[in-house]
Length: 373
Ligand SMILES: Cc1cc2nc3c(=O)[nH]c(=O)nc-3n(C[C@H](O)[C@H](O)[C@H](O)COP(=O)(O)O)c2cc1C
Image (cartoon, rainbow, N blue to C red; front, side, top):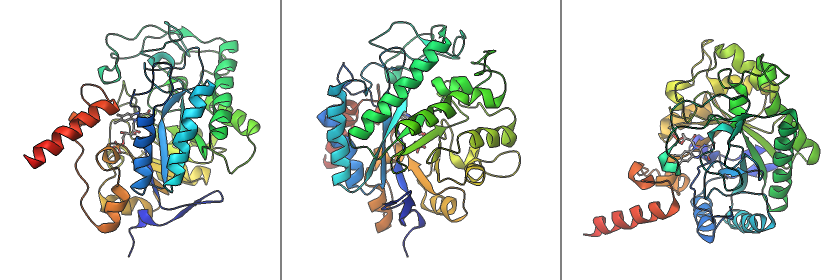
């Protein structure tokens, strides 16, 4: 009998070959001007060839103001970017998977932006901890400028134009990155959002920008066959242990506010689903998201174990599962699961000293040489 994660799934009218998605993973390997490379096309196609039903791209920047988060991050703001993404979406589709572009605004957590040397966020609050060296940064985060009402409109326009460009470039949908401490999560989090306008204060106000970006994209692209997903998380890249202050009650309000998205993707940033999903009402965060929104939900966080993945799906905790580091070590994870063969264990050395594709290739060559020595 097939593993439950290998059964097809209908996302709107599209039948996915299975319930396994590649989680978005930044690789800081684009050209300096943000154009994705041919190596990136091969990299993404490999996951599709390995059997993943959905391939979600790394976070892609959405405007030429404050959205870029790292140098060599890909963007979707020029025709050159769009052309290169078109080739990537083609390569992924030809290998049988659905390509989704993650749209990301780094906000105060920008550590490399070729368009602008200052950062911007909901409020002028210095982010916790330090920049991430694996993504090319070092030292303390700067204090961001607080976005004005006009700036917020421009942020929204950036997301809408990027979604239109992703659609034209052949993507099946976009995923609005509202997780992991980046701009939209900065709005959601009281300690980085001290605003007193309609974007600050109550949960509904703090999630308003995410909700309205989803609506604005949907108004520009009314076709439900173009997916507009959203990614949320409690933990952040610079605060792994953060949890929504009001637990399940806050989670339910957040989820209800984004229930017009095509799907919800709950990131396990910094912790596994199994350790962190349980909320104070006894429900898992992903099951609560499903119940409140009645929309498909993607679970994430250390879900490589076949029994655990089966439980997540069959017990109704989530509809789909996304894999990050396991997919890096096993671009053919779905094929391995089908054969019943053990996946390779992810080795962090693969992403050292930076998370680039070039470093992963060096690591692979060294390991292949060691295996044959
Ligand atoms: C190298 C790397 C880059 C990542 N970049 C992103 C990103 O661009 N967008 C995002 O939402 N999450 C990003 N993440 C988080 C992953 O999508 C995922 O949530 C996390 O790795 C936990 O899942 P896992 O246990 O399957 O690896 C990244 C993770 C890694 C390891």
